Image (cartoon, rainbow, N blue to C red; front, side, top):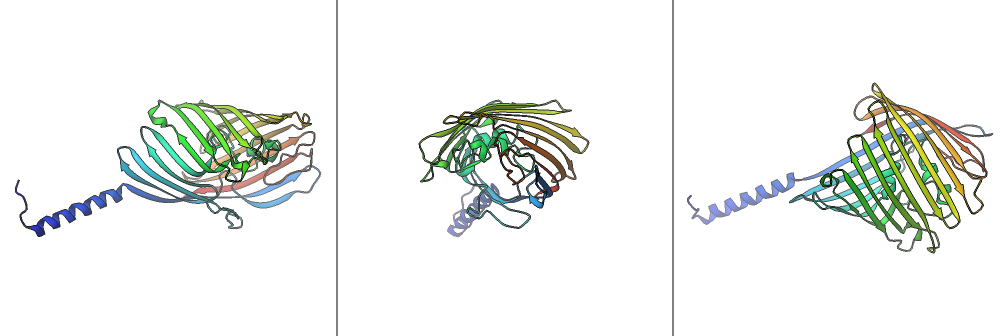
Length: 349
């Protein structure tokens, strides 16, 4: 092979190779804009009160706008960022205190060693249990959030990390390298706000129709002198004709305790899915022994395409004692029952 004696030719070749390398590197990077637009017509009614009619946002998935990016660093290593904002589709408003309120993370991910993620993100119990182990998840009038991580479920601790935590560091195992075993480990600093100081972890196994895991989440109270402690186990099995889910959680704060069980089913019917769940919350200690609740929910989703669906949902919460579990953004008076119904459309983009 002849060498290029002409310095100009050598320089031109070097420049061409550099441009080729830059182009190849650029092709290994991507930035994606994505989101969800979800709106429903909703009615809620507290026992003994008149109905509240509204246009609501996020009946089956929270309305959002996000941007995420990945750069391939080679050798199975990548740098990633994810910024995601809440949108109230009925008013167009974003979160009043934090624009990237849903997620704001920077990560270094390895195919072989897992992912190290920092920023604001979901706690392990939320993303690994509350979402996959309930047919309705944490959205809409049938949300499991009321009984699992709503204000009454915090048992007076004031925890601010039932769903997400700021100032967090999370490590995620490389599930694809572990034969279906997966896990998360997360800690977050309070930085002057005790109720954000969270420690959580979870391990599980998912393969084919089965998904099971066990985890915990501890968050400091407002004074920073004690913690609310959550311990939970959940699972799902897809039989094809029906997907069954179950989630059992034990929460404790000082003398108070809440045991919560969610059992659900999702049945595919043509282009749609029929869903049903029952959730039971049993509180005890600290004068809360009578403050229990049961939530019954049924619903149907119909896929118009891979990205759009219609849905209808009904849910009812029976409160006992002085319990105040609410739904659809409405909190009843102590001991009052509440029900809600909504019909809507959800579109992914």
